[in-house]
Image (cartoon, rainbow over all chains, first blue to last red; front, side, top):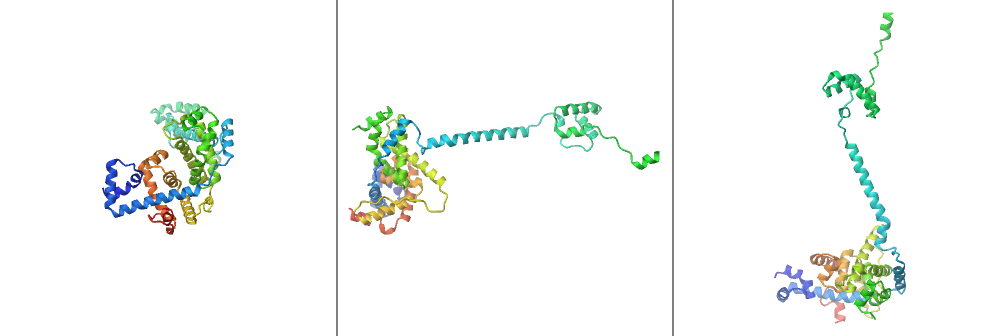
Length: 189
Length: 191
């Protein structure tokens, strides 16, 4: 046995709680090793002193006579003591737990709604074209049929009624007629 | 006078007479341990009161595998941990912790009174987990495996905590008290 192992076993050696083989080998090591013997003597001295001093310190204390009636009253009434941890948990932790669960649920639902992308190509359009007509052409390309621009326009109107994204309402309107400049009008007249 | 088995049976049956027996048998012992664990006599009284209430309410869970005092002391330890957590949450000042001065000792030996006071002060400066093992080891006189079972850790953890706690006490306790010497003044006076 080495010193490190011996000093690890000092408490159990003092307790007489080691298996007989280990107890005897520890004892042999203590006989042979000055350092370990010193450490063992110090531990035993502190153990004895501390035990005596701690008992000395508290030996005059006794339970307050009010405690017994208080305990009896609490047991008869069945009411929890205000300082008991279980009572506290009942009052504060349950609402806190419920709030925590609600917060997690709200976060999850919000994240799901935000990440949700409908399969319709209109909603998948990433950018808004400058001109409504070009948007309709763009949509027609997406549908792989440029002849169906009217259908797409109607489709957009239907989508508007169903509450599609706001910008569709603007771009689905027909482009305003180009106004002639005043000078040209005068020249014509 | 009821014996331990009778008290346990009475507790499980909800017999209020067992409370009185329990207080007579273990009240003072629990209080002293509670005082050493929390460092304040008024709080120690409250802790013992709550320990007795919880012990009675949960008596059906006691399977008789340990001594009744061990069962009571286990409840006291749990309540003391809760007490320390609550105290940690509440105290926000920069003031040093409100260490209650130990009870005036009735000892006739002034050296013992000084050493006792120094040891108490030093123990109150340890962390709750280190203080716990010191009290269980040196006041309750428990063996390493008993402490491990009582506080729910391995024997190695108990030995490690003891090692660090005793090292810290060495730093905190004045050398002239010689508590760690095999020929210390206190021991020399009381062979």
